[in-house]
Amino acid sequence: MSYIVSTKHKLIYSIMFVIFLMFAYVQLNDPDPVIWFSMYLMVAVFFGFSNFLRVPKVLLYAAISGLLVFSLFHLGYFLDWLMSDDKSELFGKMVYEKPYIEGAREFLGLIIAIGALLYLLRTKKP
Image 1: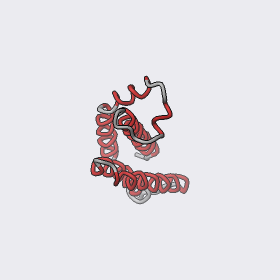
Image 2: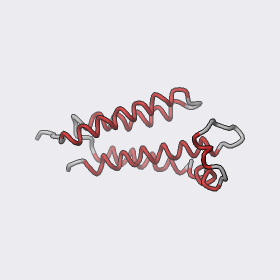
Image 3: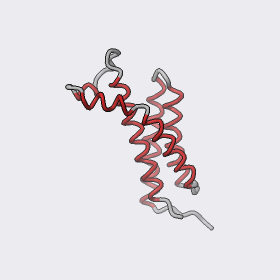
């Protein structure tokens, strides 16, 4: 049984592969780069492999579940940022007196990764 991916999905998967590789690269200057680099690299690898191989859905479900649990640890920071007066702080420099800024960024990154994997899961053929 051969694995065939449409041209449209090959293009989308390739773009997502490159985007998440760039996300991973940017994390190398993070205070805890191993965690974040690995997370984004994992998502990139899933998209890269999906152009050639059938990624088992159980792996996608496991990755989504892991990222979802990890995001719950950052949810409080995100909620603190939502309650802050200056929402633009999210796009500025990190301020050590406001740890919720980095936590909110990390939460949003996790949500983006989860969304990407949900898309991949949704486009997978049985």
